[in-house]
Image 1 (cartoon, rainbow, N blue to C red):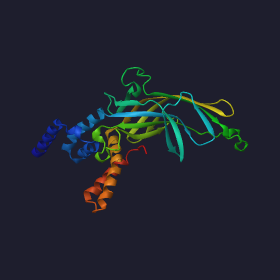
Image 2: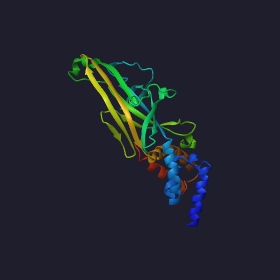
Image 3: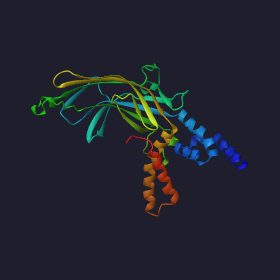
Image 4: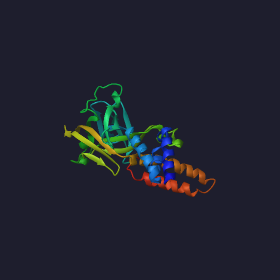
Length: 288
């Protein structure tokens, strides 16, 4: 018992010299699994990492297929757009202003918006009711509906909206071998707005207030899509951060092991570590 007490004392001294700040989330997780002594030291480090954790939430709205029979007019104008491949086709979204989410000071695991990233330098537009609120408005002119062979079938190329969540990592949580190509913001979840009030997995959930969602047939060829939503809160845990980090590290380790195999077989601990990382990464539903 005396030796364990001494070990814990040494670890506590290390904490005074930035041990917690120098450990990535996977290392903290491994400490928690090592022994009771390490768990007692690592748990406060994990709690502190959650207190300073930030997520950036970006709504992608008024998405539509770039190839098709329809023409689109976004009412709000799209100065910032992004094109992505979905269902084997290219989809263009308008990028709405992002929101910065922090852990609630009174409820561990609950994250709420503090500032709209567009207004981080001031307090405009940041009253509680307007935080994490976004809207969309778009007209689709579906000229395929004028073709006789389509009959009465409405052919729409409008895809809709989704929300992308990024984990804003500190430098210590970016794998060393990946620092040159990685940014601090790591995409971790894509959520399609389908009318459901909540998106939930085993380690992550997001609540959504769908305030308005309309699709109005204006004439034979024109449909107007309008809506507004707000994200009041998200819930997650330290284990989710570990899974996100492991998913990023998995590719780095796999590439490194391929290089090693060119000169020698993998050692047992190298194989076991990659297996452990893959098992942890598989826990969370991540952006891909």
